[in-house]
Length: 607
Image 1: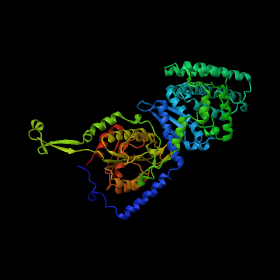
Image 2 (image 1 turned 60 degrees about the vertical axis):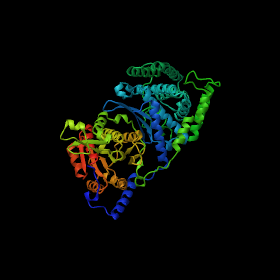
Image 3 (image 1 turned 60 degrees about the horizontal axis):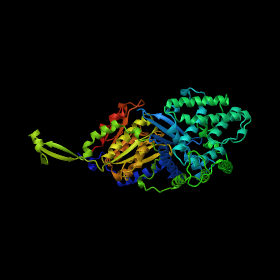
Image 4 (image 1 turned 135 degrees about the vertical axis):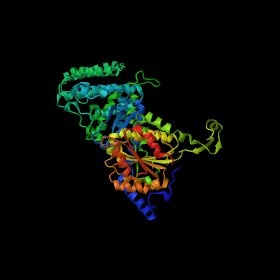
């Protein structure tokens, strides 16, 4: 039977006009307080840069299972982390400095800063593509000392960038620009008084920049650096021929130990000043370059360009490179002004478009973080839901009985006393389902399971024609805490981008303002009157009485249902009782994600 939202069937008296006005005013005021001020130019640019970074990270790495996260710390650098999901599926997280922080504290601005940022994305994508997973282990697991560990990172940074240049022919000008910046930012060798620090820095500059800044104190140490750099250049082509990842890791460790012996390093150099764990990535943090004046940086960069130009090959018109890593004078000229690709990306990043958003939800931010969707798509969950929803996918159900709309010979032969068939419409096409997802800190324990349930369910429901809206309070790594609109009813389909945004959110919201988000959505719900509003939560809102009141207020306009997944912090019976006490039409709690499909379908199918 279809669920009809008639006033006579509501669980409370109708809300009067003055109550609706007051509710709308309260909703607007609370939403503004929670969601913060309107989007600024920088926030729009952050969103654009994030979109580009997500695309580049996955496109350049050739891997869709890459999270991209911005770190708001002013000391944050670039990093790539390898992880394995509970189901054993590998994925990577590329951590970037927050764009707004990066562009504010770096000595370069605008397009110049973007080129450095873009190189950081390219570099980490190369790690995802070429660094063996076994090398992502920590130092203790690899069984190496701190000096060898840092040398491994230097060698691997050199190796993966070389492979990246061969894979992406034409990137050399951007690498030259980044090396010029690194040359300007890295310390001069003659200012480093500690011998081991000077030797380590000299090797890194020689290997990763191609030019040492300043003079070394001891000519013998210079010879050692040159010898170690030659060994690295000789061994890297051999390493690139190794297909077995564990063997490659062993050989990298052995090469780093040989380099350490050649350099005769005894004491570990000072750690990077930023939160970056690697010396090369530290170059591109405000902690390393923020104290330099832009004019001095550009002057040192020009010095680097001039030397590179003198050493570069003059390429004749129409002549192609035999070696993709070879530097020509044209490459140096291009490095000074930027590649066409980087210029086009920067122009896109600077475009601030006014979003057309329903005024009732304008205070909800559009999330920008994105994660890999596939690791949260559960095949068993999807198959179970598809099977249970087959009737609603077909759009009708046939009921056999003693009476009906038509006589069936087939049914008469099978059941002479029930020969009539009635076709009942069961389609959910166009039915509106609103999803409100709680991503507060208390959900952290089951964050992956909740994402799996949301993404898998949305995939199925969109496939049978439901019109879905998704809203949440969560933490977006690029934007911080806030109320986010993932998908509105005005958008016709659930896209992969919508699902990726759910995957990219983190359960770090500092409170559980369930009642407040209901108020913020009140006008939107009363306007669209969704068939069902599904809340995903653990049943522990900041205010139970306020949440109960808001659930009661929304019941005449939508079917209010809720579910949660039990955890170590709150067991299934307790969660089920808490959800029931909040006054929803229906609710349930389960112990694992695969118990959800049949229970969820009972909540959302037409009554």
